[in-house]
Length: 314
Image (cartoon, rainbow, N blue to C red; front, side, top):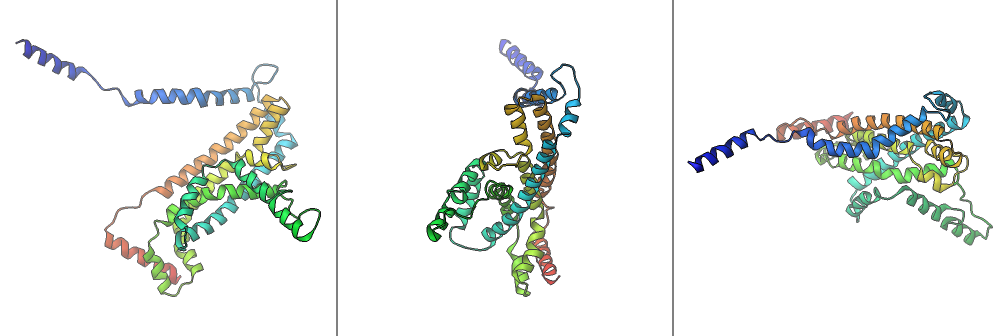
């Protein structure tokens, strides 16, 4: 009897015990996220509407927007981000084509190096460019040694063009990575059919490869645009005079001028731009990674070859 009672009691206890709901596991990381990230962000937003005299007012936004320095920084930020995105897309697409479709020794090692390159800090790339193209860099040293001139011709790293070169160099692998993933899904049968019909390499790239790469290009370009808007290390390490971006303006207002309210206003504007572009990146990235509808292999293979034939003939 005692054993039966113990068994029935344990069964009733098991029936009454309920598992912890899913939101219970989400509370600790959400609390940590709010404490580490959301709370400081809320302080920045509050400081932007809290003038030194006390109270709450959005007058600081009007004052900052009226400054010529803010308008110049906003223009420089947008132009550099768009220019770096365009350059990274063009260079990344060309390099990804070579790595994916042109067999050469060391191709796999180069593909792995791209993954390692993504972990490099941006100032390291700028420092490398300074060693090569700086005033006392290798290129100017070779020029002066060969011609006997007092100084070399390369003195552009301290200009907007130098900042743009450094950003394109740093951001290009962020475009190549999704492109290489997209190119790995292109069936060789499409390329073989197009080549058998007499299509040259430029036509194959334009008609067969490029349509498959458009989602990856859009996702990579959106990511580079977001990163370009927030790039600070490259602009700082190049020492480009007269090139002020929103991140460097925040640094100048907060550290150099002590205008914390104005710095928070600029930071809020930069955050708003970044969040909007990041949302665009997430949408494009989800579309590029969305799996296609499953179909029977034979029909899929025939449709792929048909697409290749149609694109090559177009």
